[in-house]
Length: 486
Ligand code: NAI
Ligand code: CS2
Image (cartoon, rainbow, N blue to C red; front, side, top):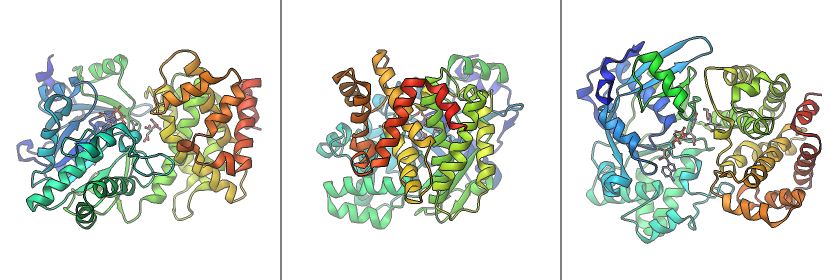
């Protein structure tokens, strides 16, 4: 079947609302795997259940054009295959109205879309590094090449922050209302971080604009959760087996999904609660729980699982000791580092996470999660470590998370493989500067963008991480897992 034959594919679940009634009220930046398996599904279901007709314009600002071309060929339709350990559900998602790949169209196509009067929400899944902020200080990095370019050429932005600011500037000039900017990336207080980045950028362009944005736009934070691995040829085979159609825009993901959204929208929003989202006043406790317990454990498994030779997360869970260590990290460290305001049973949450990680139908590569560690470690490892220390609670697994990252960085660079991280060049310089691995580890720990000044200020922080690094070096990672289970 070719791209136009998606209508003939088999689905167990398909919404039935009139697609021709959709209005493009949402513009989404970052048409990656996650958005397809998460926000697009919620929105599609919400249209069906509530009778609303919120359509989404998908924008990609980076990457090859094939995905958006394929999406156009399929008239915006795509497949989501949801797999539990035992069941499969196949879904056709019908909520996408328009598609833009700015490297092809030029950025003006995106700006024009964002300034259409009916646009009420601009949402984002652009990865942690897409916000161009310093991961430790969370301040806009004006030295980032994209931001530096956009400050010089604000009407022709290359960054998402520059694009949003330019669109808001033009809406102001046209007398149009602002929109809400909703980040769906794995960053603590993602909405507030986006707001600060946009206001900072706008302030540098025009203080008037910054004040207008502050008064008129909103930046809700969200906690987003669904494991949607990057697609591989095997997973396209799965889609074909399940639906009869090898959908180039399809994704295979777990059956679980969760979305907690700060209810702060200046121009309205769909009733996503109808599809299971939680609309709350304060997302922070949920975000913190998920980022530390789920994502923190994911990073632990990404680095240390790779060192142990595991390619997939479910394989890590088949290693009894590593599974135990993961539960210990979740229950004894991450859970104890949280703000006490949440009435969630954290023991049960940890058990659920391990069950989700164990799902053999989800081929989530440790190497995928290992990417961009510099952008992830502050919230997943450094912050909880410091909180536990303040609370006088022992940290045994968190130093091993960071030490595992160091070994991963060193091994990857030494083996000549490409390390995917915005700071990869800096890491490579450090690794090649000496043969003394301990010295490399110590120097990595001094990178302020990742660790702040903790290595200098916090004796135990440095000591524990370097000691874990040495023990992995001397005894191997499996001995470390054994040590942590006793
Ligand atoms: P992906 O690699 O499939 O898509 C990444 C998207 O980000 C692409 O559309 C790309 O064009 C865009 N992008 C990258 N750098 C950018 C930049 N500087 N400016 C603007 N756009 C940029 O990745 P995927 O799986 O969609 O994940 C994206 C993010 O979603 C993650 O980094 C995470 O924050 C969040 N997320 C992912 C989950 C998952 O399981 N995949 C689950 C929960 C959250
Ligand atoms: C993962 C997340 O890639 C990563 O860093 O930890 O994308 C994870 O799969 C999701 O947050 C699950 O919701």
